[in-house]
Each structure stands twice: as C-alpha cells, then as structure tokens.
Length: 236
Image 1: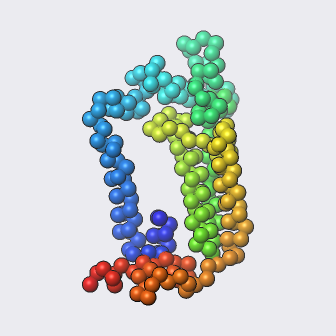
Image 2: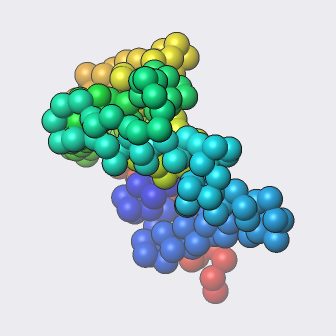
Image 3: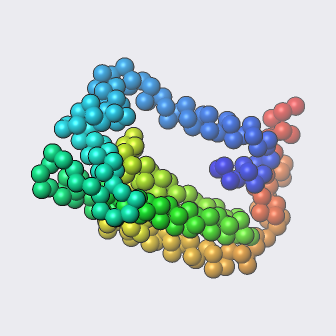
C-alpha cells in the first residue's frame, strides 16, 4: 500500500495518505496491547522481556542465556567459557540452537564476524532486489517482487533482533540459513516467484488506457496507474 501511494496510483496527497495509513494501523495494533497492560501477568512479562535477569531460571532463561553467550563472544573465534554451567556446551544451554537461535550460537562459536557477514549479505541482496523492483514495467511484477522482498526483510530483522536478545516478538526463520522444512520450502518458493518476475518484468509493460471501472471515471487505469478520483465525486 505504501508503494502504491508513493507511486501516485490513488491520486491523493502522498504525505497525508501515508500518515493516515500508518497512524490508523498503529492505533489498531496497539489497542489490544494497551487494554491488557493493566493485567499484572502481562506487565510482568514485559518487564522480563526487557530485563531477563529478573527471572533468569524461569521465563527469562532464554533472554538471560542469550545475553551471557553474546557477552562472552569474541570478534573472531570461539567464545570464552561461561562460568557456573560446568561442562555443558553452548548448544546444550541454549534451547533451539539449531533453529530459532542459530545466529546466537554461531556468534558465540565463530565470533561477531558471522553477524557482520550475514547482515552484509542480506543487505546487498535486499538492495539488489529493490533496484530490480524499480525497473519493473508491469504493475503486478512490481507489487509481487516488492511484497516478496518485504517478507524477506521482515524475517531477517525479526530473527536478528531476537537472536540479539530483543525477544518482544517470537523469532521467525532466517531465510536459507535456518533449519526447518516448511520455512525453507516457503522461502524457496518465494525466491522462485521473484526470479520468475525478474525474468520478464523489465520487458513486459502494461497496456495503457484499459479497464475503466465505469462511465463516471471514478476509478481509472492509465499507464500502469490506478487512479481513484475522490475529489470530483465526494468533495463539492
């Protein structure tokens, strides 16, 4: 929707439309959270999320363990031993170290250079895809490719944030790297769709001047733009 507004497909003021869209979305999403803030359990959970040391052996165990592993990690190489856990290895101390918190384990095992490399790779991939999205001459190709790269970006941001100890959201999969059957198949399908769009998207252009909704021209399609004329129909 943001891309459609930015492209001018709705024939409205861009800044006003974006503000209305995001403010209303934020209000809807935050309403249930605000309503439950009075609940003591929810407030306690929020405190533990931001400060896992309040309950290091209970609900804050994962967050506390992530903080310990990261604090003992080095820039390159194996992290320093964690005192108080005997001979237990990091992969045994951290739940789901092969899936949800794989990045945390890799940072501890091989150093912070792993995080830097992963961020660099996914940043380069995202920027490359965005540049190709801008070259799409088809509206459908542009929207599909933008939706796919947005999905990848959200997955990466949430996963990296969760593996750094910000457990406000449950970690998603890290595309192509995380272990998991359904997530891997889904991401492979998305990449397939993306490659299919890029194969001909910069060659095939939408035909202009087709698909007018009605004779009053309330909704028009012109040169790849969807124009909804609210001014002439509702504002006198």
